[in-house]
Image (tube, rainbow, N blue to C red):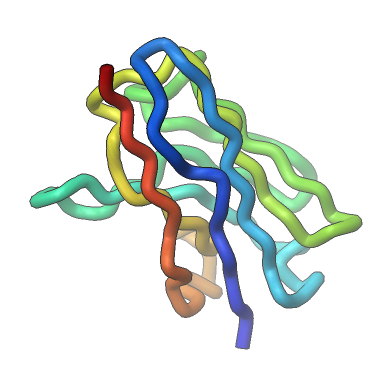
Length: 118
């Protein structure tokens, strides 16, 4: 059973930056297409970024050019660097296997709240 723990969220002003971390309980995730998702109040969860086992990345149009996903296989961690944050980025952010992966979904973690507000 893979456990995922997200961290790094917080309150930030528009235009600010945050770096989210997703620590996995097993190195097995290093060979899996992983993604960052977000869910805003009253909206469905959406995939915003994903990364393959060899580092290929994909982004939702809404975050392209502002967010960067990366991974550190030595620590079984997936990161999401978020720059130029906007109020519409406010959501709870989760990591999990990419929704196209046969492993999707692992058990969802608690997520980390990101609030962009002045």
